[in-house]
Length: 287
Image 1 (cartoon, rainbow, N blue to C red):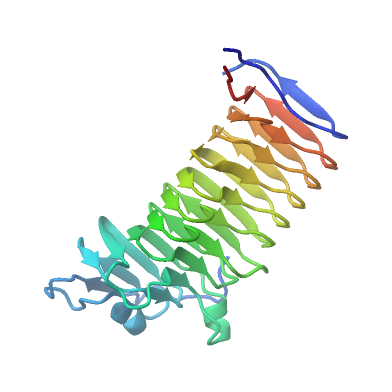
Image 2 (cartoon, rainbow, N blue to C red):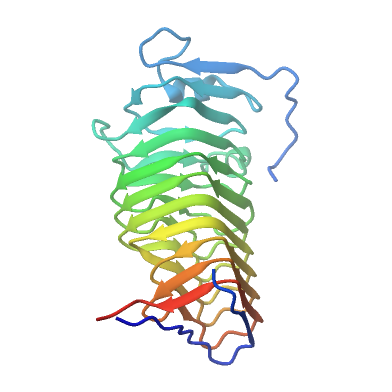
């Protein structure tokens, strides 16, 4: 057995420290309502989508515990929350293409919504969550698991700043988070991405800045940021199977993190400054 430090960095400046170890529009929330959903019929609504349809910008849709066999489209500036947990399950849904769609193309407002979605488990759809908005959405305390394609798929390339935090993305047929070619800023923090059959975070050809904080990538290809233009910070994170940054142009900082892989960091033909500090950068062990 052996343990080696290996970084493939061609044409970059590297500093290594060795200690190992905005949404669109203004919402008046003064008269905001809370619409309660309970599948057993004891609340005003038994369908999440019906509550969303009846809600106004600034309202909260509160989902009580249970399993909901539906797909939902959040096309308003709402907070959709399950304080005690709830599950969206596509097993018995007729067309389980996407569990949660954020925004749509039906109006300017719907293309620019900035909702917060919190506390929901999304399982057994083709895609867990799909973003179709330029707005600054937040996904918080979400679990996406056992989906055929991407866990979170951002399909709009322009505008917006997006946050995924305190979440788990597990067992995806394609990528954990697919954000290729987007140009907004991303924050992924306090999140586990595990068993993605594609790439844990696919950020190829993105233009915005990325912050990866306290993220664990397990049993997946790590982070792909090839041909990206933004600045990257990876901190207090563990990334298995590498960071791929070839042809990227931004600055890179990796601190207090562990990155492993056959070649833990690929950075051929990058233009930005690199700084790696208080981190472990190791080749996978081989017999």
